[in-house]
Length: 595
Image 1: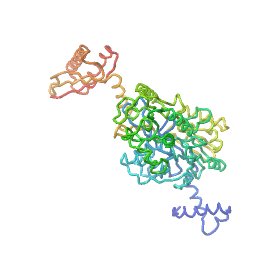
Image 2: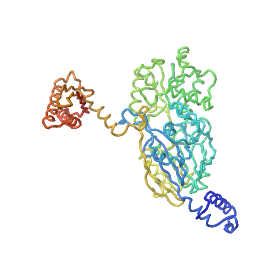
Image 3: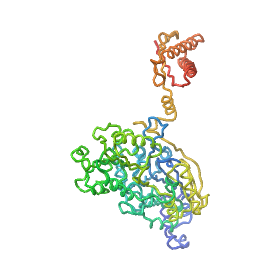
């Protein structure tokens, strides 16, 4: 049509603003506007918004959600997940961000709800590939900055916000709403788009008596509900739990009782990020005139960050160095440590195994494990508790006391959130599949039509207009495995090999062959690892060598000279023989040396 589009955008945009203010169509007939230009502008604007979860659906952790309107994308959270039992040797699992890399020019920002690893843990890897600003509250960014420094990733684009703030990111107006969780400075998000308002609760619970006195902003949620919410995305972690989640302050009551009865040292293991739990432990220590020592790298880092930013209130002289604990009577010391999940290399586990270089468990110590096991960690935690009891400690743990409360909303709190917001569409997020289903049924019980609820999978494109929603496709998603310094270089085939090695071991067959005539010059020799104890299985090894010789002779008779074909023949012959003798399938690795 020959229009200057930048001028069209300005003109038509001004037109739309004036049209809204005056309510008069006559404005289009004035000299400043041409109706064709307005039509061009309006035709270019999409009338739909897309929500694309790249993690956090049908799983605990790896939370990441994409919000797309037209040619603009913002990302909500970027978390990691800890490996499952069959992911041998894997350190971390992060989301596959292929979709974001394919659309890197559209990504405007990353917006964070809080500072837990399942919401910020992937950022050291993501920010190496996406150079975009990151918005979050001060504590969230403080913890993130420490993670980025550890990974040698620049932290130049971290932009702090406060609960109650609203920021404009392209076509998105993002509001930050205070919520309670098991970490300070957690927020929910309201995202105003030209299509409608999206509310993402983040992880939350409705704590009426939070430790810091900063109650969830119920008013803002109700205000959004009155104005109209298009889509609600809400935490589903505790959707199976009836009733209400207890207040964090109830843990302080249990701390007080435990401290009052303890006669020797008190050792408290908790999540390092739970600042309110740490604050209550310090407050109780002050009440009973005990000094507090901090142990464990992550605990030391987070406590230092929280002190620097003012999220912990500690009187002078209360915190002492771990090397000073022997300068005080046992009845005057509290140790705050990591290891509440029974991690093999954590401080508490090393103490339980008498392997810590600075702290040993002394009979009479009281050990408080102030956390509940993450699914999959139950055996590790149970083993640690057993070893602590063997060392003579008195152990207080979640299954036998009120020493831990969840940071996630239970059913009645979820109902209240739904009733405050009253969305047109609902997407349950952050939970295993059964949690998502349970949460969807809660929404239905409150009167939401089933067709307006979307139990999604990672990678699905959920598309919404002002009137309807649908699943409009799928993008690349999945797990990227982090193993040491390698990111994504370990896949299903490598994991399969590791599982086979862990189950049946490996046999390495070494043969030296004459390259000219294809005859065996030396060997075969067999090296076994994880298959059988060679000294007790000498006959089996000799018989295995004989089978390899027969396979090589057969290749020579049949004129087989390709190394790959010879290796395959050796592998098949030996594998069949060993399975007949042992009912095991070790990995067989033939190696041919040329002379």
